[in-house]
View 1 (cartoon, rainbow, N blue to C red):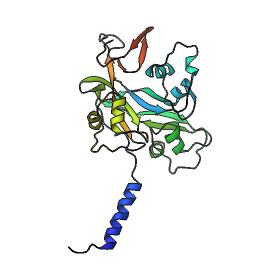
View 2 (view 1 turned 30 degrees about the vertical axis):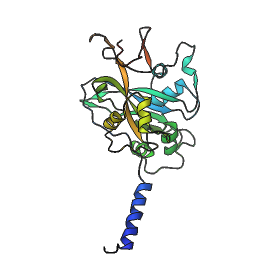
View 3 (view 1 turned 90 degrees about the vertical axis):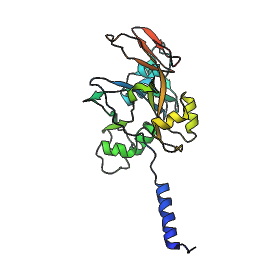
View 4 (view 1 turned 135 degrees about the vertical axis):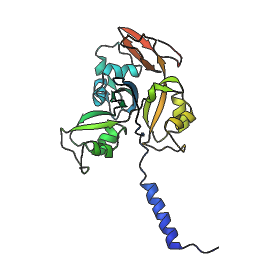
Length: 263
């Protein structure tokens, strides 16, 4: 067997090491989803609080209704002034969002953030928005040439967010999809068990060729939901409520407790 060229062998190893060290985290795949005009869909963002925040402050980060945030997480809203209830740091929340339909295509989801003293693209992406967006995505969305050490105070930044609907179904069952940021201790099997789905289903919906996941990856997780039986003329026709949450309709609480539960 001929001797290997040591220079070529060393060069290959160095190149492989460079690729491994500089590999970017897997981001949520950008999918083009067809839809009917004026047909919106619901989705969820998995968000971990970076500090103690009022419910209204969390809602403001994503430009949603505080009550919708609380009910999506099965938090009792009967208390007075519940919008100003303090939510503890490191609390995991499911943030409900709506994705609209424009010209037969699902519109990408974004929110707005006004910069404060000491903000950087990295701190906004990784801390304030919990890894749901990357510094590079912020830079591109706002046409920022370089990442300055400190951004000017008061800038109104566009914050692109992951969002998937997949026709609000999974294996022909009603589902709402959660964009989930992988944590250091996570495994694919543990995530599947936590959200009552399967290992195989997670791999399929994320088009994964390997079971390996890394801290900061964004996975799409189907959450079983209960489907309403409202007539087509009703404003709430087609309503889906993901398991582990509830909603309020005309002062009536609508709860989801099982996959096959009907409203």
